[in-house]
Length: 213
Image 1 (cartoon, helix red, strand yellow):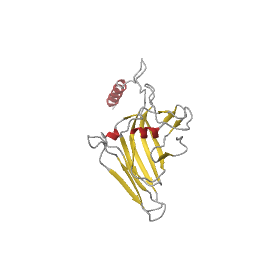
Image 2 (cartoon, helix red, strand yellow):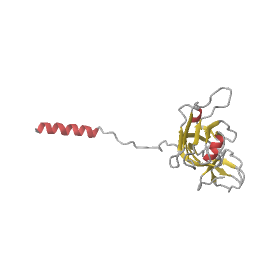
Image 3 (cartoon, helix red, strand yellow):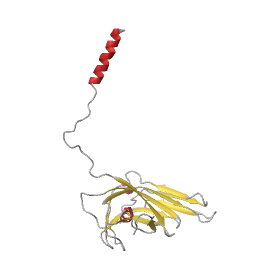
Image 4 (cartoon, helix red, strand yellow):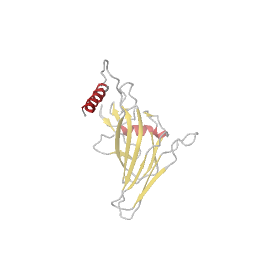
């Protein structure tokens, strides 16, 4: 019995002596200087219309701009990615159908299809159950790639169809570039210098209390 006890003590001692030590940094450790941030922007659909297609520049404007004067702006980010889109819509009259749609549009160039050829739709005729759609860019698709912030980036990124009663949520990933230079944003009106805004585009109006222009 005594021998077994001594053997157990030696094994325990060896385990304790071979335990890895925590690293001791003698120089500053590496770190991520620019973090990828996530942000969701909610928008009201202000008008019922035909299919609306948003460009990369428009999505970047909704994500955020900084006013450099009452009429000029720069983009909040210089690189962003569309992560996911949600849409809801309610009928105003029981039994009257509302229809909504989300789609990744074609590239519009001679190369053919730029986005995944899929359309997501839903309908509802109930006052308490909205029509709901969600769409996420597939891996390696054009819409899943990081996009440059530029007022001239007219690549088609998202198409939607909805009545005026719809709500659209845009989920983004982006970086704040404190290494490069700011990128000129859209022309605006009535802005206050230095204020961060979400820009209204097509039939989308960012919801209050977000600053919008």
